[in-house]
Length: 384
Image (cartoon, rainbow, N blue to C red):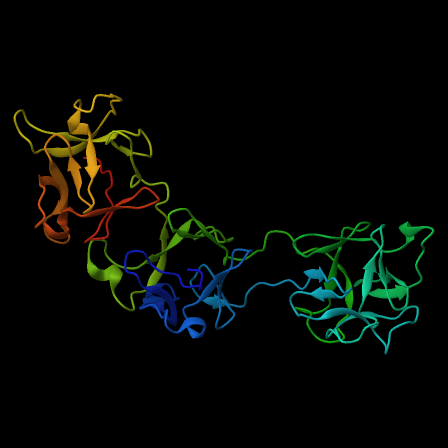
């Protein structure tokens, strides 16, 4: 939700963090009644970050593919050029500074420091020249890197007549600031670099794929799929643990685990113009009723779709989804129902009835699933 709650569509409950359960592979996740009334104080709030992390907003930690919390991967190489000339490090909230009070001398060290927005002409204000050179507004000096393993930055006289001799940088929309000459990025010393006085240097850019199992993608239809670097889990989705067709999946405290996603499954259907219910994967055949001569009942099966404009032809292939959620056959006027006891249910046709309760009620999901309201199970193809 916009507030950060992850709500299960079947149970209406939210993802919560609990003590790890060894029986569920160490999963720390449970579903619990949503704490919408608590708002920002709720421990059920998450952020799906631009990098793909599922970040728990209370602890500040991220979810990995074992469904355990771990420190979120980070980079201290994201910067922002502010309109007043400050160059802000996004991770620490601190600014590019020059050592000294103020820092004016050749060779003065370039460091990270708490931003001084109230100092009108301090040494934290910079300007970008047309060549890409960054010049300090107070000292009118530019940047150079010193030789060595860390390539620390220092203040040096500008070469306006030969700008190629100065450090030339380019700012990218994602926050990286890269040297045009070396391809290295503006970096803060440390793991991560957040302390006042930390040296600023050039280092390999951290803009490649992040090596972690805790990368998640929200798929069409509401699936949350793992796309991290653990090949055993990278194609699995968050799922409430329990037996399908029972109340297991709507219980308070039900564990959440990873299971293979059914994104490209035989549970997808299109309710097409003219009343056809067409399976949208594979052969794209239509739902039909195979009945004995003179009988209105029969067995549900798939048949080649017949594109026929006459509203009175091929009625056994045509259906309507009523306002009450019933899937009604236009030939027999009977409805698709789930019959039988839990664990032994079957899908069949029976006379439509307002008193049939939830056995005949279905919901058409945006992702193409036809979901039985009572059991929460999808209409799916099965071979004989």
